[in-house]
Image (cartoon, rainbow, N blue to C red; front, side, top):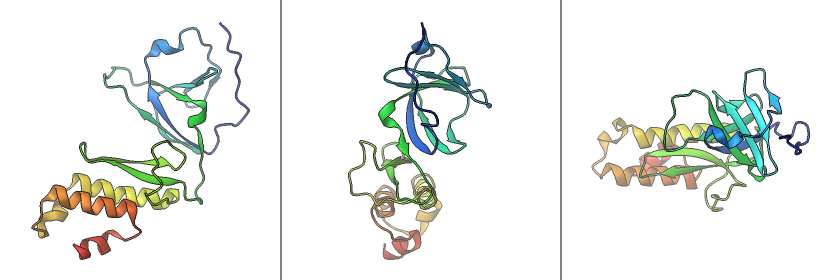
Length: 179
């Protein structure tokens, strides 16, 4: 079966995208349309792109993340799918990113302002500011040494500090001093 869809050349330079892992048989019948120097393989369909790769995250000039399936596979290579409208512009200057947190799992990640999960309330930051702020958020969520000087419940403290890191421009030191 031959793929008829071809995205415009360099359509994925300087983009942010979140792929969802899918089973390998999702590309049955599709022809590989591109292979990168690092060995990633790309398959295009009318609905979106499949990428088979053993590395995800920062790629040359793009930020592509993979959300894994709940069931794990032994293979190091993972197949991800993203619809065409999930590719958002990326650059180092513009305030494009916000931090999203899951308090139940004590996890956080950054998302693009064009994603469906942006509520318009979280402060938007550029890539570098977001990376620094995300590191602070993850430390608050996963470490406990910072909490030994406080008498409050650590879960409440975590939520208070993290929310201020997401919804204000206060530094971590300013937030802690105010507690």
